[in-house]
Length: 370
Image (cartoon, rainbow, N blue to C red; front, side, top):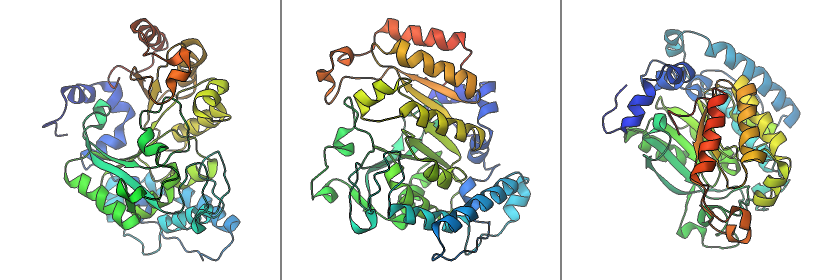
């Protein structure tokens, strides 16, 4: 692995035996000793008719997912010898994603709007996706830098403390979105991704706001990407089981937020119902059935140590043993947070130390990336 121009802590993190143990495919892709999942998916032939019922297409998806997992276990040399198929597994995933747009079920709000004809749900996005910025980011977790971050406009959350509200919610209702964000289809997004890869990014990092509303465009872009690079899903993870089914085989690395362990907190500060049930279900799935290579971001909020931070760490220790955790102290009372006195401040050093001590007692790995 080459560390030139990298942060010193990145080199140190990769010398940690547990980091090497938990992120083998990611490091293998960096070293060109492994093949990114999306490339493998394009070697799996997939015959279907776009006019087939959604139920039938979902059945084929389940079958192809099993085939993908079997192929994934082949040795690297065998994988390199596989040919790309003209009609492949990603074509099927793209077809299903576009059908989901007609009765949108990408996130657990399940707005049910037909985005293909311009109907708008909470995220306020129709079919088109918009990128507000894309650059090699040196401020991400140590093992991820430089990260090829692609920031999408639009979000399915309504956090009162949002630090990115200019791209998540402030633009809603405006008709001039293209003045500050680039409209992209799959081809344009692939060009952005491959440009980041040629600039030295170690991964393509789909983020936002949140990438969930733009899932269909991300999937389409994978047909046009060809560089062997880690695909990384950086999200609030409030997504449906149906939409997670579409990307679980395609992403090499996962960077989920896990903010709340109390549903009342999630509803109060982010306008989200059943947060804990949805997030724990999805994180367990990517841990057990996906790549399992995960850094969980936990944003420590003031006055939320007992109700949120500690139960979250308990869950990770008991259910997600392969995950690494970034214990984040970056909470700032932005946007509308001043209307909520209990969170209208930064977390104190004592609060941060209490959370980290609790993580230490649970033997959670967090120091190399926090």
